[in-house]
Length: 445
Image (cartoon, rainbow, N blue to C red; front, top):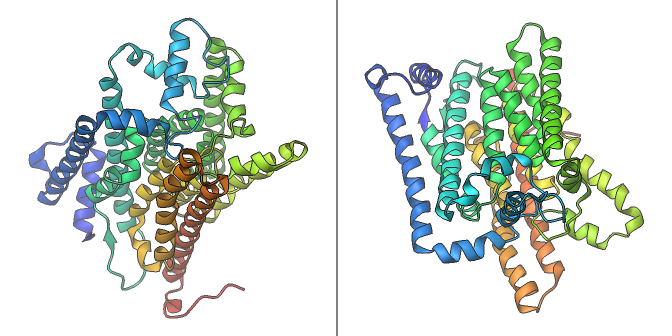
């Protein structure tokens, strides 16, 4: 953590805008050092993953892909392999109720299907590097913008270095496990990071493209169009027109991709992907709230509660984006956390992305109040889930209540963290606009 000065902030902005194409001699020493640190972190992240694959390859390939905490019916690499096999033999992968992932993944992995497994491992390592690099660029862009904005009077500003942001993501055990399990959720995460970065930089068209791709990959990232539209709103003089145009571009692109996929795979692709996620057709256990509840619910009430559960997640998009309209990137970060906690088929990788975005707002750390509680809840939830799964499925000495209890602790930890971070931003906004209240305790009645 280093204090952000105006000189270093401007240098970082120039470096980011250049896209890394500027000559080394034209960069200030601080930017050169930061670029070197970032390159070292990215290289070390690759080495760690390669070493794990070389030393524990059989264990990784046999054990991790089957973990319900890491892979779900809509992100499983095993199911993707089956879909590729069916497609290679001219059989629709969406017939038979096995494959439930986007046609984008079928098209992307079509060439890799005939290559050795090491090539797939390389693709997943590369995706981790791309996401970490995107987070680093996002952190740098946000720090540069924050340096130009009004802050809390008398405050010493701090910003988490891009290399530190990348390291916190790359070496997160949940990220490493998700990558080694080859969960296809990493492709959705890459699109989400791209959407947030391009939106923050004012590249609306690219942000819309990334959001549409993420939506086809995972459905719930459609919520991000709200904060991305507000990023356009901040950069355009014709505000209402800009928001409308952004939303219409997003809808048009999503429909265009849908039409293309219907032409290639038929209408059954929609019922096997989007409709499958909305209706929660597969009740395989995961780290979410849906599966156990819909196992227990009577069939006549199923449709009602599906609407309730899905709207609980989707209903946050516009209110959160509007409340943090002056900091739409933060609204996007909160929505990523809400997706992680409330989507129908979550995994540990969703939490890892949310945690990877939080260091971008390091200045909120001093305003948080429940970090210790949130951390303990998440650690207990992550630690107990494999234990209770073993007791339930492998030993037979437990039952579904054991595993679901760990899931409830895990989700409660995420919700506590969301509440804490959101409250911290509100308190910081209050300190900026009404500095006389800094020494007072704010009580909401």
